[in-house]
Amino acid sequence: MTTGTASDTTSGAASDTMSGAAREAAPDVRELRRFNRFYTNLIGALDYGRHLYTPFTLTEARVLYEVAHHERVDAADLRASLSLDAGYLSRLLGKFEDRELITRGKSEQDPRRQRITLTDGGREAAGLLEERSQDAAGSLLEQLPAGDRARLTDAMRTIRALLGEGAEQPSGDRAPQVTLRTTGPGDLGWMVERNAALYAAEYGFDLSYEALVARIIAEYAEGFDPRWDRTWIAELDGRRAGAVMCVRDGRPGVARLRLLLVEPDARGHGIGRQLVDACVEFARGAGYGEMVLWTNSVLGAARSIYQRAGFELVSEAAHHSFGQDLVGQDWRLAL
Image 1 (spheres, one colour):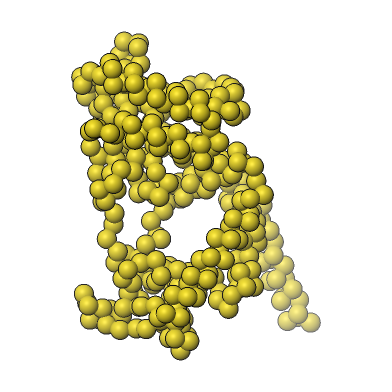
Image 2 (cartoon, helix red, strand yellow; image 1 turned 90 degrees about the horizontal axis):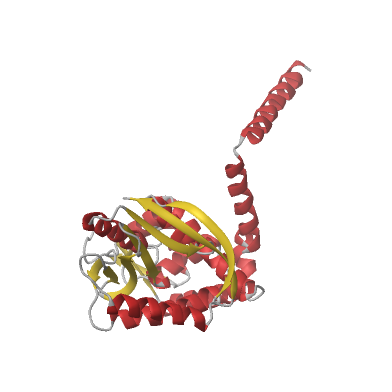
């Protein structure tokens, strides 16, 4: 009985400690864990194979994805990028090799490293996984109206931006090159086209938004003064991937940031941050005393970039524009 009593006491103490820790957890910690439980259940992460009707676990599917989507992948890259135990990864790759999904050989760059290559069967399996994953994601999204889909995708970009993105590529891959430049022939027209297309696709904006962007661009081109105005084009590996403008606001000493844009497939490389930083640095160098901008609350990722740059929200108001009910926001940065 003495032993049983001690065991019960220890168990009770541990239970009380765990309950106390749960009660003391901050609200944001509880909310993050609640979201994790919801999302893993939603996408079937706990029973991934049955969810997508495949023989692969979630980890196995992710390894296949990495090998299929990168030209050169070494085992060490997979271990680092996916934070996998070396022994576990070795057994997983051995299983793939036995099923003739991959081959393993020495890396051409470093014979000490093991190069992983998909077989024809591996490419077929990876393709099937990709198709079924896209279908599953599409089924989730098709239940939502366009406006809610835009809010959801914007929120997911915000999560990636705030918690850090960059683990999707094995470390052996060359990092894409981001460069900023001023505008050349055709760039302003490209900004009108891309703003109109992206905001229509992601937020359901109508033709009136394209008209607004065209007016902003036309006014900039007609009244351009290099002392006070500047536009930057961001390139990712030599292709246009984003843009932003710094223009006179009309009030003495005030600059306005306008038309920040980053292409969807170029997000996660810090392009938005670099564009905003360039705008702020130019405004300071030109002698402006403050910089302002107007945006809408649905643009969560952009607002995160503005906050990191030091902008402060000064006012907001509901409005109906571009075919949508929106909440407009005015932001300010003292220079």
